[in-house]
Length: 304
Length: 252
Image (cartoon, rainbow over all chains, first blue to last red; front, side):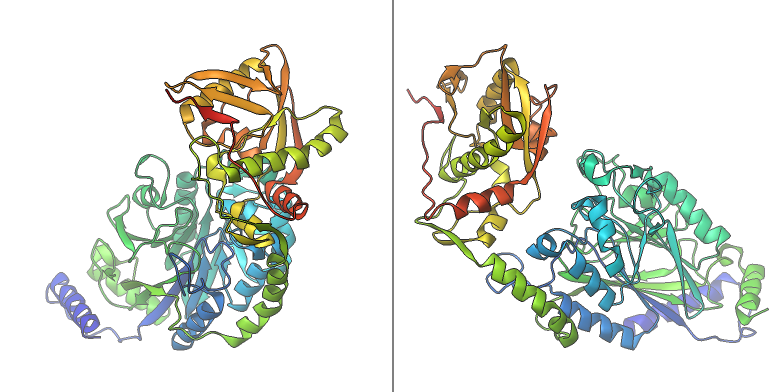
């Protein structure tokens, strides 16, 4: 907690320096608002924890444990959102036997708010995905998949706006190019659009038209392609866009020990995070809103 | 005007650069999901019947392996690869024949597609899921003999134990060039159409296999490789595959 106080004090000092002696005492100090964003990605039907003999992930993961963790975080801060960045399906026999029913039912019990769609979520075809929709009490967002001519039409929105404690949070989804990755028979008439152009549009709509306080991109396009740096990824997306506060990624199963801080197209900080796969970790990002406090041109102070 | 609006206005007057936001601080971290966390009993109880059902099916014994079979057991062909390719042939050919009155000439799979060993002991449905966790299914594609020759070139260069069924015999010379290639004991006829069974992943160019296009027709059997294995294993009391001479390299 000491560290937090230090940051707060130093931010306050910056404020005073910034206004050149003008007193801020005329402001009525309002209470700090805290929004917690919890996230998973590429859980791949990993419902049970890994067994004690697993070579890599012994005794890790497990939905029932994630549930108690999420519950305790929600108890501490009711203004919490739980998000998933896709590839919910495929990886254990639970998917082969039940086609994703159990995954969706459990995510509903954990009170997931929003998820996006990964390439493996088409593994039983778009009809297989559609068949499980009744089991999902959370919403799906994807702004760059056009499902108009498919059974999924109207079941996936480009974005979702959720207001918590008066803070307006816009969440939009992005999916990976399906051609070459998923059989056309599976995704059928789903149309893929360039994520960067769509994200530029989405952030404008959410920030300017809808006046969201927080803009989150739920992405399944992959963290970064080292051997193909021009391929669209969360990192290239962060650099090429503005007004996105957080990109929650998936697809590349990237285990980031802490979120990456990137500079966006206007030099402001964007957080990019991804928590590997199989429900081994839960990502947690807290956003603090303090009326009357100055922030630098780079944006809020970030502690990771 | 709410307090928020007033504050925003004040800030706008004072400091231009920060007028649009009051997000001041972000903290991010990663939390381990491990056995230090409590298990949520309601979730656990909800999963239990599903788990019981899956495990009952998965642990049902369908055959026996007298030894452990691994895809690293041989340079150009392995017992486990031969088992898989021959299983695809014997389970798929009746389906293909019934639909087309034609026969599969041989099967080609990929070495990377063998996802697990078969351990010595009881073989269960779970074993088949381990070997083939993906949903790939059998396709039969008609290609000309010259493309079969391209396939032989590919196999000679790949230098991996890509599984082929026993109807094919491929011998490489010391320099890894194709020395001889026969199907049903006959040399490959460039003008003939061969019906090759493979999986949809390889048909679509997976593992750099480009020789399936163009072709003289694709037959999708809607038969998952994993189901092929389960059906095949169930017919056998004991799995007894052998490494043999179907794909070899001459030494000296």
